[in-house]
Length: 114
Image (cartoon, rainbow, N blue to C red; front, side):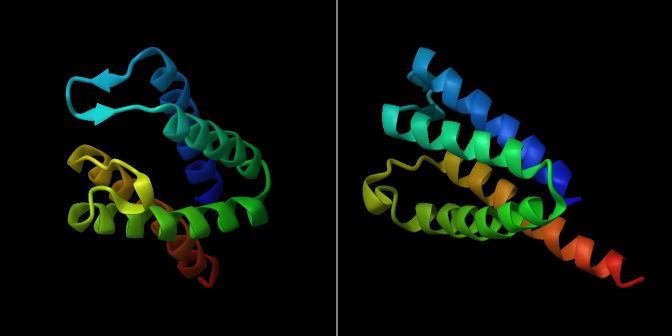
């Protein structure tokens, strides 16, 4: 399950990173900037690469699951956390991707023991 997460999240991040260079505002819900685009591109490439190996995909899902879940939660309280401009839509996306990453890792461990 972690391999699917790493690949899917990687492609999502990659596409968002590319899209951000052409569209600076998406329906008033998300604003893109160059720094965010570069971060998304790097995370996308890492995810796609990690998705090729079970161990790397579990690590990717675990690390970015925690980071994005926390970032999504913190973003509701500190919209300019660490200089990032976080909108509500971004927070929701971060929470979904973070929870999905952790579910991919934890769900895999539970089914592996059966």
